[in-house]
Length: 252
Image (cartoon, rainbow, N blue to C red; front, top):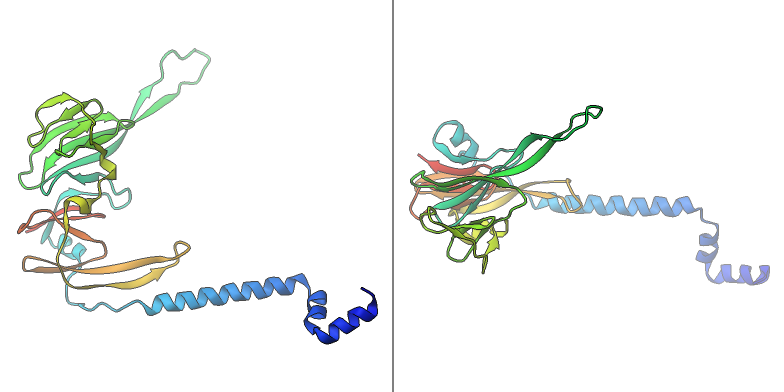
């Protein structure tokens, strides 16, 4: 294409010449501007979906715990979320706590620096929420999965502890068994009754899509309270409930 053709094309299509002479940085700035605009619009839309607390006079769960009106049956660490709790049924649960066990390495030569091996083990217990009874307490290597079958028998390594008492120990049968870490709490427990619909209090930009912070309005018996995480009823017409971040609790 000669200069005459270029000039003619520019008259018919001015954007051709504009794109030809436009610096690459202009495109980058334009792209960044569009991304920023999209982020602003998204943030605005998300924030517009948030709500103010509908029941400011209803106490938050943590306040009831602090006042002694709600007590722990099995407490979780707020950072590690240990121990790991899985319900076998609406009163029996398995609790796992990870432990680090140090063991000195053997057969070290005199000119070599001593090294301490760290072995990860799991402390396993089967407990009853209502009676407080501990059916079983074992410490096993973390590489061994904990399983449960359709009869609610608990399988640890190559041993199976039979429900409902868990005192009878037989050789493991993993037929129809599933890893205990695969069992969701809502498969065994019902969500606690809500006296009002939950709300979204805020969004935080902690990942690509943001994190939604909810507030739930629960009622157990005559007691009403709020919680920032979901709660599940452990026993029908009972005072026990489960919170994924706090553990197993009881209303006094």
